[in-house]
Length: 490
Image 1 (tube, rainbow, N blue to C red):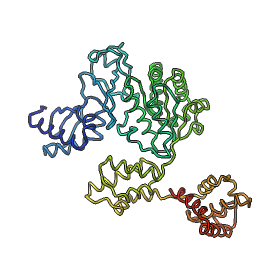
Image 2: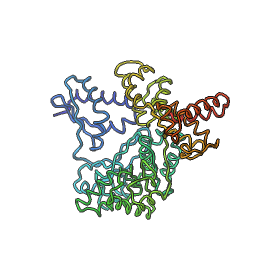
Image 3: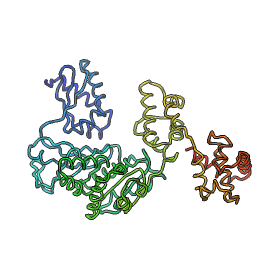
């Protein structure tokens, strides 16, 4: 298998096309390190320096490279991405797209130092060689942290602070994340971020790691999920290697654990995490945690661990508002470089309220459909392409939810919705809740009455009439009811 002059020219043209398509920064990060190995029986073989980069190229660029090759050479039918088996250690990790981060030294396993083979990619655990150490001949005493390839998870180059859209629901979490990422000393320990699925917790975790890397490449950072932490702990127990495990996690400057709720009910893992947490805090090392609930609400977690997790700053990320969803869609459309009618973006922001991940997925679907089918992006086309997603996102408001929201708005207890109290401060909110139950649910009047302390259907009818009358004569009251309705529908 050889690389001839014609192949070299084809590869040069393909690289030029790729650079034009993905841009200068992404090309330098992910595609420039690729080398052409040759072609054999219609299969082009390209080489990348690390296994992690191979996975990234296979997932994001391999199909496009194959299509471009086929355009240059019809005999090409597949692409094989290989990892370089020998050669000098790479000196830097790929920078996040658009972040302009400085290079970070890739830590080299002891076995790699001894054998002088290309080290495995261990992102995002970063450890720079000691000052003055030679890049050409690192030694075991050079200050390089021993790292195992499977200890940490890669960072997504899209998840930076620059790409995070800030709004009322996430402004506290964003501000806290920025403070921790830019701080030269530990400020909040731990920083605990919590919120529902797809609201931006993982984005902020990755953004913190990228920013720390940009500010100080010498800081050692481990980012991984709680599930992977547990897996590594079990693996250490199995191979009687717990001392190396403890040293690995207790010698970092920043430990970031995503989705810590996963270790709920896992007593042995919680015990080890508890001691790791305490060891790092005692050494004034930064700990950053994310979960789907606040520390006090994490069921199956030891009381002492819940208490420790709530020590620092607990910042929650609320469900998105319409304005935030619209801002996210507009930013995403800019990144994609696609002109999307404003009414389509507004429609999506109104209809898809579950989480940001689903919102971006919907935008990707309509853009892909437009490009593949050659159909303009219109409101009608959007409704057609996303019919299944839109149907799943139709809000089914419950009476319990209405009662809770109305009680919060009027500052009364939910129990007052079912009580026999007739004071206006209680009766009026109860009537509003009955009215909204009639407007927003498919429940019959008798069913609604039963949910309000077993009241008769005529009481519900009276409440509906009364609220309609007040809405017509009292603008402030009408605004209150409309606000509650929009909140429940969003």
